[in-house]
Length: 616
Image (cartoon, rainbow, N blue to C red; front, side, top):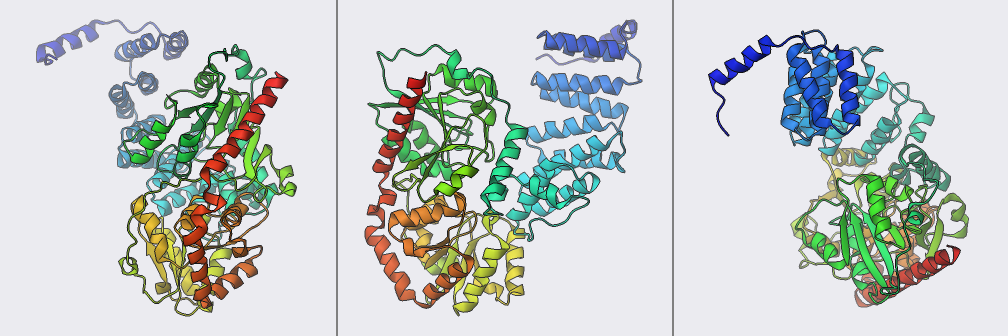
């Protein structure tokens, strides 16, 4: 590209000076640009703003620069968009809308510090908030908090959320993150008072996932799911999308087409459980598709999953309506949603009803409340009859355990306890669940268990420094030396599995039971004490223990849970017998009979397909 000379610059300046003022007012230019954009001429709208800015006087030019920047960003001309926003700020250094968009642009290009600084400037420029600027003020606070949470700078994020809720209480999105961020930090109580937020607002604002870790009341879990669905899930179309596509010709290939929908087909709890499910599908009866927006990577887990599918359709960057059309055009008969309401979920795809049978599995162990999701895979243990009234889906009850798992987990050699600071002669309890599953009630029981078993230790993960500090402080307050808490570092997947053998007994969380972690522990021969409650998610580990042949490790109340854990800690020989049983028979138990579970799932899908076909 040729260099721009001084003569060129002078010529451009001369031409600009010779131009007549633009004939359109700013309002007229905005209206004309909007019409061009609506007509599909984005470049024309961009050119109109560029010309207007060069030929118009200064008043309100910052507004035109801002609009220009938004169009440039839509055209993926991010560098030009940034220049437009910065030009707006040169004209008006306190113009908050330009700061907000500039911050988003900086975040997209990976400049988190720049985005946070820009949003901090926007907060300062809109302080104190007024009726005219309160939305800009809250936008800057909330997006800075969101980014800080993503960066795991949780205490900073919480402070901004508190500041935001103090300004305006009725912000359910902010309440949702405020509650969950306190869960992540083990900051108890979860519902700490803030500003004028009422107790009802705090409860109603709790996300479905957070509620699963707070309450074992199925009605509250249903309420949280339905609120999300009512706010985030689009209304289903009057005519289901799958009925708008001509039926495919099955004469050449009569196989049932199963589609798996997820953004977690990589090293994620769901992505770790399902590889053999996909690999073992009977290809003489089923064709298996993946529809996913998982970030691409060369990781072995990601590559193994991709290899297992017959077809892989990328949905990253594809809007929900188009994604649903791709699924319906593929002739999918059974669509399995592996995400539901978890992070990254796309309920707008399911709401279009691209497949005649739509099933929820693994991603959210409980009801999603989503329109378009007909069925939920469960079993008799996780879904007792009295729980059905609290689920918007119908239950597919597998004859054994609901959970499929992977028998090809990579295991490292068993490490010595000393590697993790664990004495060889101590009784070691562990809980490698995510910290957001920890509750003050169960943690209090853990402290009493440690006091009831002298010399015992509790081995935990600490997702963040705040959680670790809070757990240590709570231990000290309960009369337990914080040194009896040992915190495990993040390690490779193979070493993560191997170190289960360094513990004596796993203590489950409640009401959000271990799922994948429980499967990993039992696979590695580590027994689990669980507390089964009233909801699907609080009965997961009980289902696994039943299938593996250890139902006597299931309790049904906090006192019983605590009593059994203490009893086992005082009788290590009994724990050793459980470990021997798992070593000798665990992997041969029904829990890990993956081919059988896959056949059971296929039988259910085949039945649903046939029933739906008859109705059509």
